[in-house]
Length: 276
Image 1 (cartoon, rainbow, N blue to C red):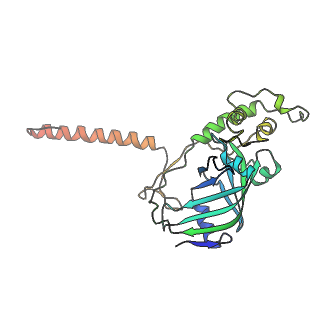
Image 2 (tube, rainbow, N blue to C red):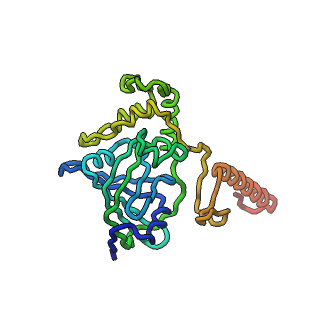
Image 3 (cartoon, helix red, strand yellow):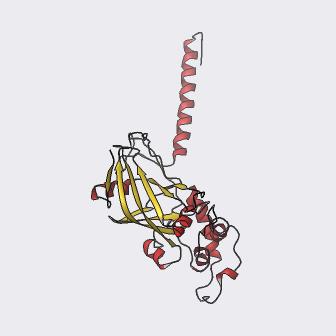
């Protein structure tokens, strides 16, 4: 049964913080426009300020629908769904504001020490309605790991931006007149994030800002795969940690080969009418 609230109840705040992904829904005012629904993931991207305000770190994507729709009408819905434990669906309805990379508002919410690769905006949502419902039809899933491919893609492009950033004393230089470095994040934004599918404005200032403000991020390039293997050492969430799974595979291969060879030799010595 669904329950509605005028703000996020304290009983849901901690649950929301533990979710590893969420969905964002927006739409343009044009009845023929494209309604957008985007899945979002990554560690520490969603933040609860208080019972009526939340924000998330918006990472670079192939499109810019959410930002464009918010610029036009501000309407946004966030959805969380439980994939383990008791079933639950939580929706946050609100009015969204875009704080682009390079603005004071962005820097306040996402300092460089915690910024993730490709971070292009902070999406701030003033929540005016919340619902919690059963989610009985949502299947159970085991969490394996957060993907790092997007981080690696953006981190590589940001390295190009860092190498071509304007000097700190070049405030009088118009960034729009500066050549765009190939394979940079700035180039990607200019090609893919300037307008929505319906032609609504997307990024406005971030492409110029990244030419002046050297992009930094907290990306750690050492991979670690998290597996649900309770027979191994577990973290505080009860999820087993397996580092370097390729080594486990190689070890398993040689152990299997050794076992087959040993059994074959034993059967040969017994002179049985069959062998492996």
